[in-house]
Amino acid sequence: MNRIVRLTIIVLISCISTILILSQTMEPGLTTPKSIIETSPPINIAQNINLGRHFQDLGVEGSIMIYDSKNNHIFEHNPQRNRTAFPVASTFKILNSLIALETQVIADEIAILTWDGITREFPGWNRDLNMREAFKLSAVWFYQVLARRVGYERMEKWINQVGYGNQQIGDKNDIDRFWLNGKLQITPQEQIEFIRRLYQNKLPFSERSIAIVKDIMIVEKTPEYTIRAKTGWFGFGDDSKEQIGWYVGYIEKGNNIYFFATNIDMRNEKDPAARIELTRRCFQDLAVL
Image 1 (cartoon, rainbow, N blue to C red):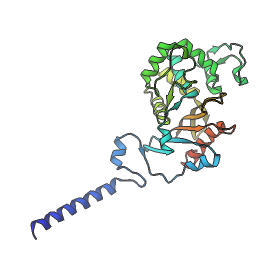
Image 2: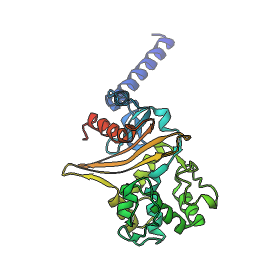
Image 3: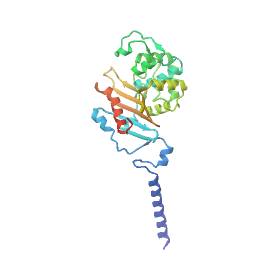
Image 4: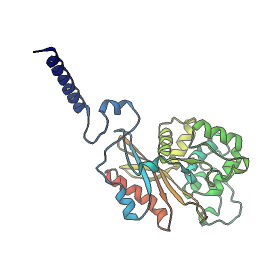
């Protein structure tokens, strides 16, 4: 056997061995070897689940990203949109609550703020409220008071320290509206990263502040699972603006945590409810709900 033939055989054997090793470390449907999944950021998987059909069935345009933390998998519809920044709207109430508690501009979730007497579009807003109630009702005036109490310099400092979204809050005149007028923007993927850090207590806030916010985020609790979440609606009441809807949060079920961010165009009166319905349908596909 001549030297060229021997070299050819050695190369072939090496290639076959490499293929066999990779095939043993790959899981069905994964695009990356298991060893990388265990040591790297979340991995997109080749999905057999068509999450997009729920958007079609409900007649909405948008995206969803779900991160299965136990298995380090991402499920998503419309990946490009999931990496596009949108105004944070009322999803900022999660961070606004943390900052207000940490700076002690409000004592806790049951401390009352007095209504200013101005009648607003939602009857539930037109009364004295505490943070637990205001968060659930998404009462704009309540969180505007908190932002003004925090003040521009401290607000900017905390948002930069957290690294939240594009970290833009305008000038001092925007202190009680920067999350409403589109200055502060965030991607769905960044929403999930922020919520993950909240869950893991890796945000620069005290355990007390984080525990209070996690508690007021609960929207549903059953023996099988707990959902903690916040809606958001940019452009509400202003037809001249792009209307964007959010639903972000996480589901605790068994020994797993599923983080999610749903983002849609708000075009008619059915779309506010569609934010939540879309999310639930996608989790039903994953056998979580």
